[in-house]
Image: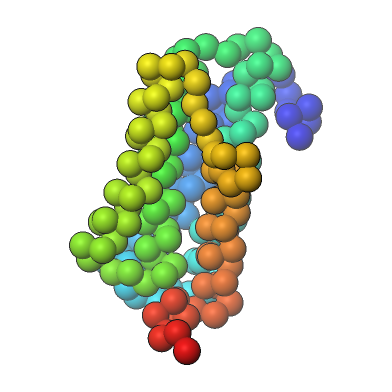
Length: 167
């Protein structure tokens, strides 16, 4: 896919484009479900799925474009990881809207449970020079595809599905 991009396209612009798409979906979701407990129209959950897909793939393309054009830099990596930090929050709030969590202490604990490993992984990278994104079977990409499926299921079945008692 990166070979389809023009070489003049800055990798940071690719990163920023993905973040802008994700932010637009987040703002739309917040308009329809500000407390993460209202039922939004189904297209809102579909928009979050599409935005998550777009962000995931644009986030991968930016590094490939930087290496392809010889414009990789520590500042570009910092920009990418800074955008990722904001994106993790936007994605987690999107999950809250899709599964109808509301603004509860459980939602905050859930957000911290996702953010803590992300922070620790980047701390490890700072000290070791290497970052691990998974164990070979499960990583960031797989988690994002599960998240996309969660939004699509919610788009078709509604957020009440996640609150239904298990048989």
